[in-house]
Amino acid sequence: MALTISKAELIGVFVESLAYGVYLMVFNQCMFVLRKRRSRPSDYLVGTAVSLFILITAHLVIDILRNIQAFTADEAVPNYPTIYYGTFDTWQNILKSTLYVSVTLVSDAFILYRSFILWGRNYLIAAFPFLLFIADIAIGVFWVYTLSLVVPGENVFADALSVRVKTFYSITLAMNVICTLLIAFKILKIQKVVAPFAKGSEDQISRLVPIIVESGAAYSALLVIMIGTYTSNSPAMFIILNSMSPIIGIVFSSVIVRVGLGLSHGDSHRANGTLSSSRNIQWVTHASSRLPNSENYSAPFPYGGVQVSLQQTVHTHTDGSPDDIENDISSSHTKNKSGSFRVL
Image (cartoon, rainbow, N blue to C red; front, side, top):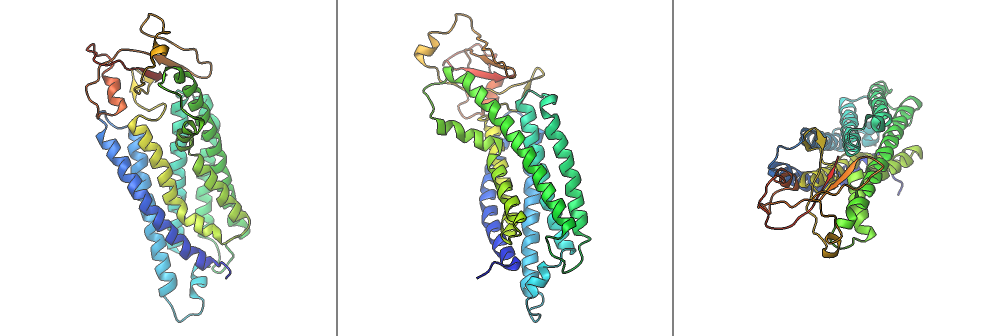
C-alpha cells in the first residue's frame, strides 16, 4: 500500500504523540533538577526548557486538530483528507509551521549558546555559527510567508516553498554540525586533562555518551534524515516533520538535565566573572601521590583555558547539586578528600 501524504500525516501525529509522552517525562525531570538547584538556575536553562515545552505542546495540539478536521470535517467528499492536506494556506498549517520553526530556532539558539559558553565566551569561535543562526531566522520567516501564498491544491514541493524549506534545513544542519563538533572537541579536551585525576578508567563508549548527548549529535542526524526525505519528495517527510518537535525537546531537555546536575562540562554558573564547572572526583592513591606539594596544580591546555584545581574541600550535603559544592570550596573544615576541576 502506497504511502500518501494523508496517511503520512496520520502516522506522523501518532508517532508525535508517543514521542511527546517521552518528552513529558524528560521535561519533568528537567524542571525537577532546575528547581532543586540550591543556587539560582541559569536563566537560559529555564527559558529554553519552558519555551520548548510551550511550543512543542502547542504544535501537538495543532497537529491533532488538523487530523480531526481532515478525517471528520467533510466525510461526504471523496478523498477529503488528501484535499485538506493539499491546502497549505490555512491558519492551522501556517501556525503549525510557525511553531515548528520556533522550536527549531530555540534549539539552535541553545546549542549555539552552549558552544559559546563551553569555549569560554569566545566571540571569534561563535561568530560563524551566529551568522548561520541569523540566516536561519530570516529563511524561517520567508518559509512561513511563502506558505501563506501557496495556491490551494499546489504541490507541497513547489519551487518557491521547496527552496526555502531546503535552505532552512540545510542552514540549521550546518550550524548544528559546526556547534556539535565544537562542543565534542572541547569535551574531549577537558576529559583528556581531567582523566589522570579520575578514579578508574572509563571505556571509550562511556566517554562518547556524554559527548553525543551534550553536543546534540542525535538532532543533527535527524536533520540529515529530514533533508533526505524532503529532497526525495517522499511523503515519509511528514512523519519525521510531525515527530521532530518532541524529539528536539527530548534531546535538548536531556542536555539541560546534565547541565543542571552539574554532569556537563562548562556550566553557565559564573564565579568572579569567569565560567566555572565543578564536580567531585575520587582520587586514585597512586595518582595523588605523584601530585606536587602545592595545593593547586594547573595543567597546560593549549586549546582554550582549562585549569585543573585540586583542593581539599568540605561538603556536608550529599544530595546537593555539584554547582552547590562550588559554593563550599572556601570552607576549611575537611572530612573527606575530594577534587574539583574548573573550566575557565
